[in-house]
Length: 385
Image (cartoon, rainbow, N blue to C red):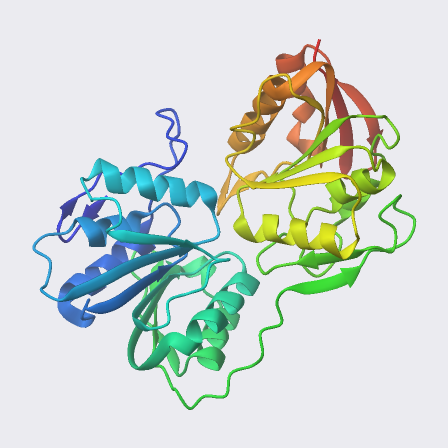
């Protein structure tokens, strides 16, 4: 990435030389040009929200010369992968550990924010939640600048900045990117934070029928049960006697919760790379008094899970990485599942019919059976031999 202070070598996480997706885009470059032009005094407490792969904090931490009196630089992210990418990118450019404070969206935000830089997230709910959490630290002199691609910045995005922080306008577009320029108004009466949000599941979906689901902001389908998960819940292998179950990419944890309710003796591991998702899964389990042993882990898929230690993996893999459509995440989830399953262990997957997951599963496991299908979704089962 070319910045006003020189070029940076950046990578996503996990780094893969075959991955043609970049760790930055034009909106990151636009914001850095704006900062370098002297439009923003980078002093005091600088907070970077939603930095997708650490491009912004790496550029700011690695630049030289650095102004005297420059204070703490903090990144806030919901993504474990983004946080690990940031660590690797900072180390790649010789930035000493501790130079940048790496916080999650579940951590308490800084008490004071002098400069707030926002990479607009895909989820408006997550933006709303985080702006409301940061607002008490924003003061009249805080400089607030957001950035995003034109297709990511909508009227609703600007309305959130305006209703939570103060008067907001956008810049002209450059290379299909825009800046969001906000002037904080300390006297503004901010709305209450509606997150986390809870709702009752519908009837007729198995052991989780009528149960409560708790969702933190940014979790997929946070205000209702999505149709893919509903189809999955209707066809899960309840009563199979699996001793250790993994809800891989758990989201709000409704799938793993249903399995735990069906088999109180099961040990259920909830895994997601989103801090908001794992917090939601833990809250969902607590709300329903899930019996047995439950473990909650923010991780890169099944990294850290011992080989041959799992009986059943349940998975509804994502097929987007931010705006890019890719099956790389699903493939890594499938290969991770095969590694951790015991001989005879099973991977159950729900996905859109057109994604063709059965081809990948046959390639990896040597077998794949169609459990159920409808015009939109399929449930597939692969067994580790």
